Image (tube, rainbow, N blue to C red; front, side, top):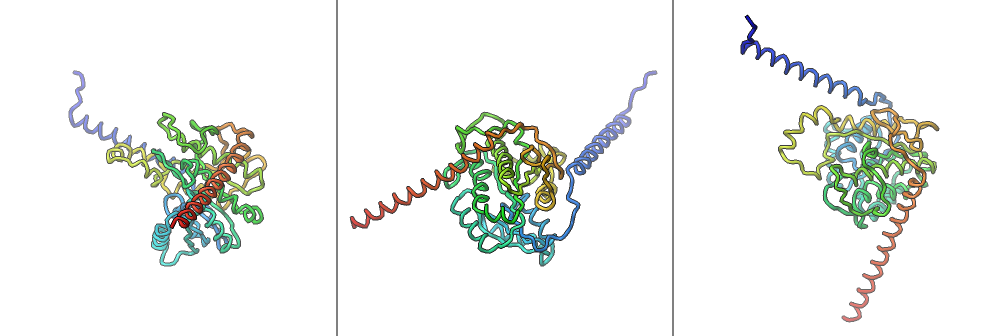
Length: 352
């Protein structure tokens, strides 16, 4: 007689298959956790001062917490000082009543040249020795947003804001061989280009990817290459795709969480693990003549790897020059507006 499986047999088989699948998923997750890597060094950073932009949330927060745990002094350069102070309170709660290092909140809005200049002046005045500048702050948005100088935010914040900040600190950074950490992304390898005709403008590409964001990450890498050529101690990295509030502007629906939660759990790093690449770049990464941003190397999974993107020197120099012009143009317009406003005020006063 042929064997006819009973309901009990099928149930047991189904349970076994489900258990096997779950076990495979868990093993895959453990494999990824190991592959993504962790910073194992724990030497003291006492006496070293780090500046971290966007330090109150996400990767910036986790990096700040890790460094202050190792006795570093961290200047938390944040757009919102109230949120910076909230983050400091949270770090004190997590590390103990008094953090081993020091936390200094300072206001910095990378979408405003005035704010960047004010921050740079205050930093030079109050911080005599700067060990590392971490250009972490960045964003990705779905709908058009612009900086105070009317540049679309991916270009204006992710690239131009940090370009101006480094330029204002140039003398200090070069003299002290300060580490300059540039947070790029592997997205620079995917559907990314630098369109000089549309630079700083909002462009609808008709792609499922946020190409303006990808383009800005490519700019970060080109920028790091040019910094290296100009003598800066620069380190560029990809933190990996992380489960933070970075994509808060996308406003996911409840069913997105339901559908994508298993994928998030399996494929996305925690903010703490993504920060490992920033910590490594900020504390112990070493560039060599063969492995540096100019030769296409960047930090990923806490080690050096080579980008798949084919860089060229013309774009590198052209982006630098275009960035200088963008800042100069914005400054010129600001002066014109100030003169115009002053003239109108004078005319109004005469009429009255």
